[in-house]
Image 1 (cartoon, rainbow, N blue to C red):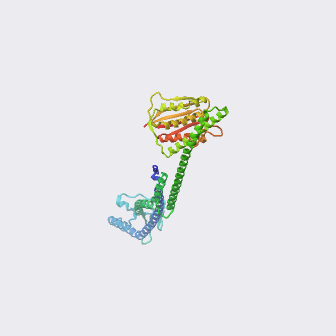
Image 2 (image 1 turned 90 degrees about the vertical axis):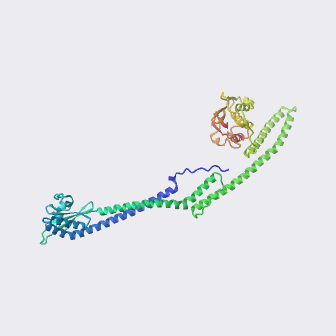
Image 3 (image 1 turned 120 degrees about the horizontal axis):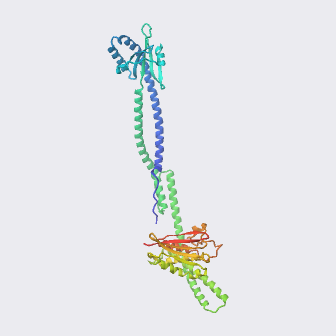
Amino acid sequence: MPTKLWASKLSPFRSLLFKFSLVVIFLFVLIFGILSFTFIRNFTSAEKNNLLSRARAFTTFSTQSLGNTYNTYYSSGYLKFKELIEQNLSLNKDIENIQIINADGEVLFDSEELKTGLKPSRITDRNILEKVSANTRGEIKRGGEIKEIIDPFFEDWGAHPFSIRYLISYDSINKTVTNIRNTALLLTLIFLVFSIGFIVIITNRLFLSPIKKVVEAARAISGGDLSREIAVKTGDEVEELASSVNHMAQTLRSNIEALKELDKLKDEFIMIASHNLRTPIVTIQGYLEYFKNLKLEETSRNYLTRIDVSLKELSGLTEELIGIVSMESKREGLAKQETDIKGLLEEAVRGFSSSALEKKINIVFEFPESALPKPNIDKFKIIQAVNNLIDNAIKFNKEGGQVTIGVRKKGNDLLVSVADTGIGIEKEKEHLVFGKFARGTSVLRYDYTGTGLGLYVTKLIINAHGGKIWFESIPGKGATFYFTLPIR
């Protein structure tokens, strides 16, 4: 049955959509920024050149007129002069101020005076004074831009009484550039919003949706649903990936079916072989009991004893194989009943009194004084599991060692432990302990009898009861096996 699918833990900020959107936004902002910067720079340069051309043309046509107006009206008709000056200024909004300055730096007139009523101070700037005294037009730069034009005025007979200083303002261009920048920024934001929406729709439809189908199918396959197929027809690498996943699922499905069939044949073979072995084993046991009652020589009796031991091992192996097949295929259910776990453990230990005595093994119980809950278990199956653990604890123990059997309540479980002071389990063998035909130590170093199925059977029994089994071991000092049994 398919297991629960694992959920995606992918952060939205790590998704392909987010990364792709970031790349597109970055490229768009970069390209738009370069284009905007280039456009604004070229526009500003062109507008400044146009402004200067207009200012130069204005000064060319205005200087003589303004000079004559000053000579005619300034002293006798100031109001008329003021009106004419304002008319001249209105002809070019980029000229923010006009000054009439003589060679000594005295400001004869300043258009700011019309606004503020304040008399201007004398000019002391050497650069301005040089331009005022010159007989040709001069221009003054500040901050890399031409901010002033000084044009000399000549009277009809050639005298040069003063020059006219025109102060240029770039405010109109700066305002226009600011408006362009704000408009560009607004358009950029609007375009970004629509672009992101467009990217999300297109990317989802063309790329992410097919990829999500592949991911979901891969999750389903990893969860055991090998019937899932991916229907992606994009004609690109994603479709090729989907086809590969479909082929992988089909191959896995075929392999699993083949393995199931082989496993079924194996179980049937083991079951048939084990059942067929029972009859000759029983027959041999009958004849063996008959010969035991005869008066035989000591040598013959030794042979009979060896035959008896080997026959019991063969019989045990046969029963274990039948039990394994039954439990793996779940043909045999559990006969559960409420059971006193302390009594069960004590009953199991009684069956090993002779083998423990033979190796001088001391068996110790570690039970709590208070009563323990009675778990609902298959008593005979659990005894079989405990027997396997105790048998190993004695078999792989040192002579004169100790086996400690404990039980205690842990949460909603009973925790049972079987510890020994034996040879322990080698680190490189730990992962094999609960496998079929596994041995806790090398057969080249120790001569211990056994089928190697005991711990595998024990694990099947504990798992069938909903419990867990594990162990801790220190090579050369012993091992402790634990298993839990649910109380409820």
